[in-house]
Each structure stands twice: as C-alpha cells, then as structure tokens.
Amino acid sequence: MKKILTILSALIIVISYSSVSFAEEKRDCSLIDDSTGVGMLEKWNCKKGLPPKEKTSLKSKLKKLNPFKKKN
Image (tube, rainbow, N blue to C red):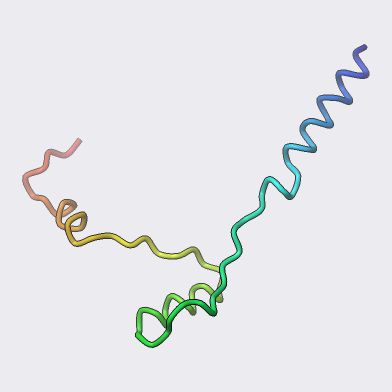
C-alpha cells in the first residue's frame, strides 16, 4: 500500500510540472506596426523575447505624483 501511494504521489508531481503547464504565449512580432519610434522599440523588444510594456494612462501617472498622499 505504501509503495502504491509513493508511486502515485511521484506521478502527480511529475504531471503537475510537465512542460504543458509552463507553456507561454507565443507572440507574433510581425504584427507590430513599426512606422513610429515606439513601434520600432516594441518590435525590437518582442524579437528579443522581452515582455510587452504596460500601457498606463496620464491619470494613473499623475496619481503617483500626488504630494499630499500619506506615506505608509
């Protein structure tokens, strides 16, 4: 009984760490418009395999600069 539980637990661990569970999304760099400087930089980063940059709005950037906000 103990041998079956050991084999079963080892099998579960191997299955959970298989390559399928670590699959990442493949991006197509040819779809990025490189007619602007920002587009060329995004395409270059894509070809290097870097993750895409977060797009933030001006409103969220200004909220970070609030001088009256209490610091924790």
